[in-house]
Length: 69
Image (cartoon, one colour):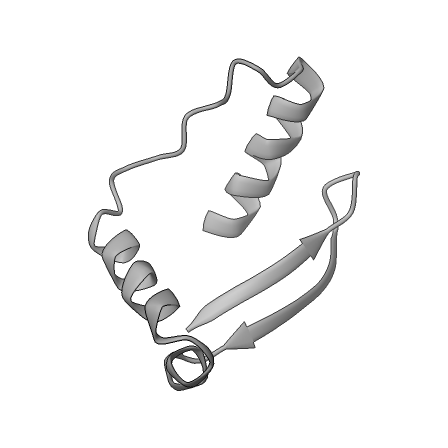
């Protein structure tokens, strides 16, 4: 199951949709494989890009924290 979230600039959730594995496999089987691989390597985090301004990095961290919630 995957939850896709649209988040406002202030970090609040605007909309979300949950997509099951079957739907993902029907729409595009490669996405399902990538999600399984990503799930198998849970310990790997996303590094902040040094090219982003401080505000963008902060917003990105808020989004990642909310998704992992």
